[in-house]
Length: 474
Image 1: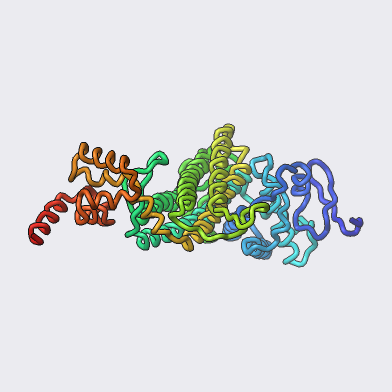
Image 2: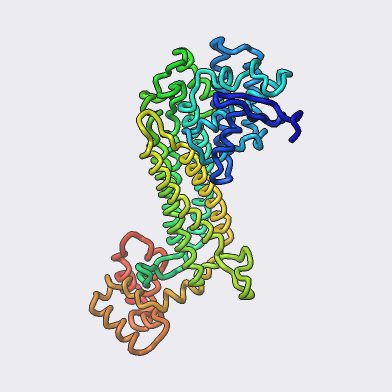
């Protein structure tokens, strides 16, 4: 790059040449050199949330008279532009970084300052007019800005996730109603158990997902408590008292969320347990997804449901198709569970008045949210187009001697055992037909009706009804 295309900036370590057209400055330049770990830049969700925090701080300082109106206008516009998604290429710092997020905070300070300078008609780097620290970061610290922004980004994520889970729940509930009359064999320990309906199987999926939806929705309450205004360690040192109280109100307006200042701001600054709690809820949902997807894979393997093909399954076996959506969702769940371990580890390693590892917490938590949002959407799409194979369901159920369990109230255990033994000895295939021959079609049809099987407990009136019908017929 030619010298004329560069500008010189300085910090406590000396000078650096920065591309003239870059909105970032020397602090970002240092971070780019220091942190070359993942090749993955800081999440734009976090960047947009940081811009909301910076805008709230700017508006607070404007109202209290700490910022010139022209400078405040320019900073506010720059924040709005970043919130809208502009300048995404100006945040190159690696997501994995030391310093508790200072590099990310300085990156956005520099971008806002230089864009504000541009809006006011000045050259980038002319920090005498608008300085990344003196104006953009006024009355702030990384230690209150960064965790506050992470909570705002997480709130956005859990809201989107709650909506995605709701859609998935809806798809399972539709299948529950659609397949309520399809008889199938239940299974425990991968062995045939008592008869159920395919609809009830999907009802259990829907109910499990519903609990995760409720937990996800409720965890936003934890994220609303922030430490903005606490500056370095939560005491508010270097920030005016009026600013500390007003900035939370401004942040509520800018973010649209019910943000509130923690009662013990030092505790909010020092501890990252809330992120562990939220991540635990995400991990619980990932466990549900893994379990449900594994069940769906087995049902598809048994041909009791049919998942349509989404892509060719093999480079060597023509015509092979695999349940790739389910495999991807399971993989996403495994990654979320791994991220939870990372987040808990990071939270436990904070020291005294700060958690130095919040950038890794942010990287893992926001990745988990995005993975689960996308996994939920993909799974909902797949469930929506999945078909039932009622014939296969019925065949597996009618061939299973476990059907006899439903008749225990009418036969007793000993007679039921004798019937199973007789069936097995005769080498017959359809156990339902055998039971109709031995117990009568009326009893079998009544007991094995979906309504009777899925009612809570057996109906004592069934045998009496049948005897009465037999008496009437005779």
